[in-house]
Length: 174
Picture 1 (cartoon, one colour):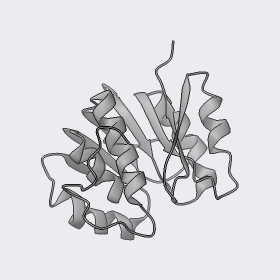
Picture 2: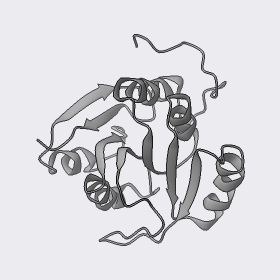
Picture 3: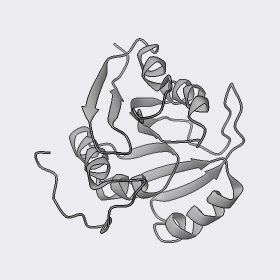
Picture 4: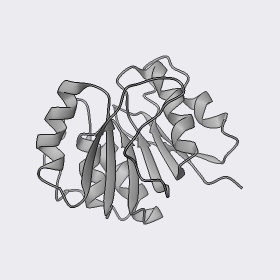
């Protein structure tokens, strides 16, 4: 990817669940969009790419209490000026108390863990975020691509690494 460093400041070793290519994809989108406020579902290694890409506020939504505590320690405690962990209970339609009302530049939707639940999250984020970035996890049978396309907004597909396979970057409504 043009303009993306081969070594990263915050992500030193690729993991089985998040490759350097996936990290570079998120980082390059951040640099291209100059997104500063981010709503993230499924915090983790991707959160580091958001921080490295210049995010000044990331509201990280997590529905699993064990992972919530883990990411409070790994992310919120370390990057407390940037990261706010927000617990929520999954439902359709989704309601997440504690997030900013004025909206976000970007949503990164890599959660909840159950892929079939992400369509509700995509709809929720579309109402609050200018852009959406969704790892499609091409190796899994799912309807994430259809959920992105159903919004009636422009969608750009970005080839990536082994986790995502492809990311969908959903643009602003026309």
